[in-house]
Image (tube, rainbow, N blue to C red; front, side, top):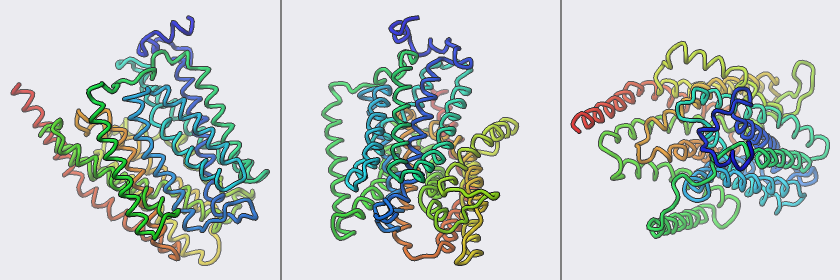
Length: 506
């Protein structure tokens, strides 16, 4: 079939194509695109902290360790906040396919800017990668779903294959980018990330003919009568950003890097609050749906705290790997970037095991209990870090300590992350169902904003106290959520009962 014919077919019809391991060839396009995009993202992230904080004489930017740690956390916050914008633009304006293409081009430009040896181009590059990832991240996965009819039994299998691509890219990136850094410096590492993103773009453009109509247009385009209200909303949001930035400038005593970090932190804290208030008070939300909104709040808090710990892989754990870890494992010398490959490798090995466990237990325990278990495991990982730091004193920890910590966090991720989006879409009111992904992205955004503020507030604190304090508080929240699990269940059942009454009455 010719490319124009394929493009004209409805996306659901393309599910009849079985050329890629029994799946549509469009899945191959999205699989390879996401694999190489994740390669570029995690490759850049693996060396970003080291680049920011290394001495200028050694090729780094020479900024203070505290500021570098906070900046990397806020970079993560920015990616997730901008993903909300990218999802909205795709839904209402340009469609997922163009959003992905534009995002990929911007990411590649950002990596090229980082590959240039100057501070201004480096900061420009970081901003471009964050912006491009925000445009691309929420939209590639949405196109995977569009390749299949709603009743196609291969849908779950397709996402398993797709997420395997994510983890292959995440696993290999730290090795190759780390090797490039060791050979030619930081900018060589960023150049490898740029090449990875370029490969992703080639696969996406060349394989676009296999996507059919998936992502080709905005599913909910802006109607002319909506434009005045949208412009007013945009003005309000921009005004709020200016006000928040002004408050941050006052707090930090002027306009500097700390001002940016604080501004993004405050926005990440305010956005979920605004979302929950808007959902609960919206006239489009029924009385039957409001208990679900209330039930989702403790789950969101747990997810936020989980990602606060988990995403420190690129910040405090990366610093611990470089400065306080013996870089010798089974007789071989390793680079500190190596540890950021432990999580994706663990996902590849353990994800099928967890899928089997949930199937055997018929998805028990309850969702809230799985969230509590995931957060509890993340808390334990930081308590292990605290104990290791106390045990080594001024020395260095063996490499296996960080490996164990990352595996524990992976176990927590497999308890919380796969069920998180499902719970989000299940509990979101119908009027907000298409925005559920935005709500889920706000959890890691807020979590990393908390990390940025904690790093600033605990400057000079020992690793033992830092990891132990966070781990202890997170464990208390996990226990509280476990205790709240029946309460969450009652609210969900209450909503179901109310909806049943309304349906019966109608």
